[in-house]
Image 1 (spheres, rainbow, N blue to C red):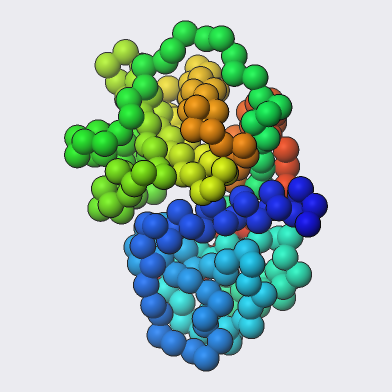
Image 2 (cartoon, rainbow, N blue to C red):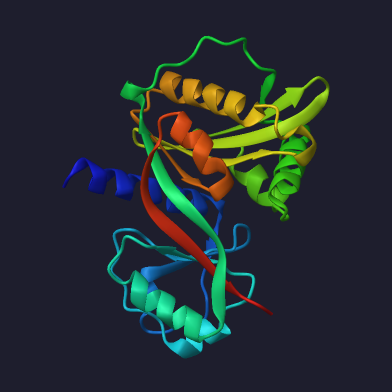
Length: 246
């Protein structure tokens, strides 16, 4: 296995294992569903693990999947084209796209900068603030009970960055083996354009170094990809996330 193949697996393995920690449930069974997993609530995903080569569910199943569910397609996988064609034919469309990226920490030098005002989230009040800022940053509601359930997991760290007295940005780290995934990095609209995301990312990467990680992974939006490239992250493959209208 080449390093890139291993890094691809590590990226999605980290992401989907985080989703599993957030909670999974069973959908009405169909004989070939065992290759897929679904969220019990937020983040409302229905996905196939990276290592699986699935038999795809029937068109009738996809047509009945709740509209709140988002179906990520790992575009590097050989079954991706067939899955996307099926979804498009049933009225699904791309809700948002992401770029999988990685950074080998041996190639990252932590810059010397004044420590930002960042809180490690653990208390109920901190969690409430984190959920509010994250929901405002991404424009969708995050289930606070899900975050409460994972906030004190030994492999998860939540952070809130403050500007003055105001919470301005949030981020999440999840460690799986020697890989740390960066998740839910968001800055509220009123604080954008001030370099806060860069400051937060430098801090998170320092945490990854201190956590003795060797690889950092993330899934970048189009607006965030430029920053991650500047930080030294390398592109891997696209992820297209599908949903259908009610």
